[in-house]
Image 1 (tube, rainbow, N blue to C red):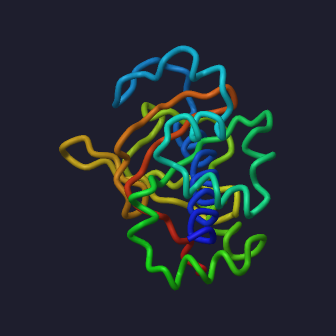
Image 2 (image 1 turned 90 degrees about the vertical axis):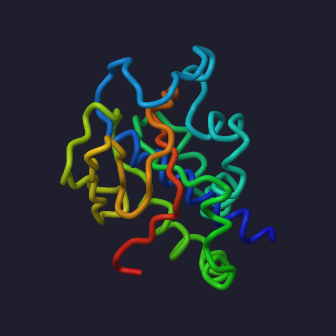
Length: 178
């Protein structure tokens, strides 16, 4: 259980920078209600911890040694999978990632992070966003306005932090090279 929590936390932290890079603007328009002004004073990690639905991601980010980076200056966009998203990942996969925290786990987590602050209004259908692990994410905007990152739905967009933005997603993203 501890390994799974760590993996989830790492993935969450990796996703946060991706979200920030994908969004890229400072507009106040958001797909979901804006967080309280005090949230913007917190970094990506503290914002994720305070939200309470990213415990696995935060644990994994810490296990992979990525916490300091996601607390750094940034800005980063993180596509953050929820605890429920991590719960859908087979335990064997989580165990394998946890067994290689600075390798496979870090690769998966950094696939959720984009350098820069990318707001939802900066996204366009068919857009490719390069992640900090060097691979790209595909952004799709459906006719009903639903935004997808690869096969994950963005369920909450534009959670601004002191060092970037978080976009909450409903699935864990796996780099194509994995």
